[in-house]
Image 1 (cartoon, rainbow, N blue to C red):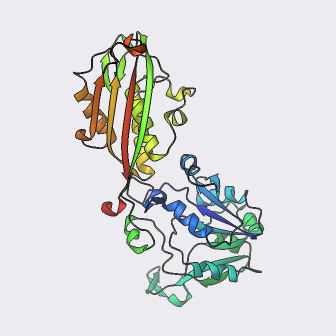
Image 2: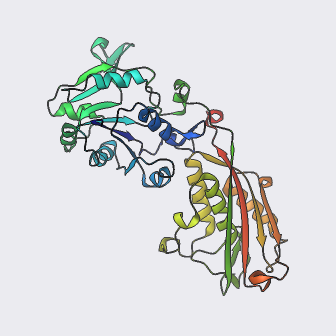
Length: 374
């Protein structure tokens, strides 16, 4: 059994990445970046366990991909690492950033080779350019550029992070306690992904797969008097609506389930539970907007949707064009990629008795092509 736990940090918002997708969710082939990084570490066979630190929303989705230990991060890197260390029981811990995604195996091995007796082992690069500080040149041979991953004695790192001082990396925290830091050679290949320009410096990341993913959704709501009816994002009539926790837009609800199904993100009840007062009476268009925001942040984009509304009443012929255009704006696709069909149940069943409406929806999504967006 290994004496080292791996902690991968990825709770940041990717605010500098300048794309709608979070950088940890860009796809390399058909695998998201965070999972690609974790699996490459896992194949080394050097770790007792792997801990992934991310946001609560990301973790809920990440758990569908793998069975690592997941920890909700804090407001800062230091907060996130402190939370993760509570789960670490091994004598040593290696900490790395998911954004440091092309780390050579020999660089990791150098860290392990130097760990015995070391408080903290750090990979470094030498400065190759002239360095100025306060408008004066300094000796670049005295400069070391610090990289991750860093390998520390767990007990020492935990103690170091108890300080009120904010540290930018593990070695700074450990050094603050007076321990000597062990340095090993880093690698230019271990470049950190921060902006879209960095993608060209990371040869291990390949363009996303061009496969299309398909999802299906269905929803049914009974009618309710004295309530406005919204369907496909459009106000249909004022005096009879749908019985529901939200505004009851059954078409949008079916569409959300289709989109979530295509992305493997569960169902509408998981994201927007009907026992949560946050969503009482909420416009379903707001739920769809939030769903689309999640889908894009997790590395997908919508290709097209197709919906069939089964209703004996109301008659929808005059509303389908408006539905198409309203939904297209929210989905961020052209109206011709939103197809709305309406039919009756030939007076059969609860629909035929004019008691409610059922909607079937199919959605196609693809991985966000970050290569074309650079």
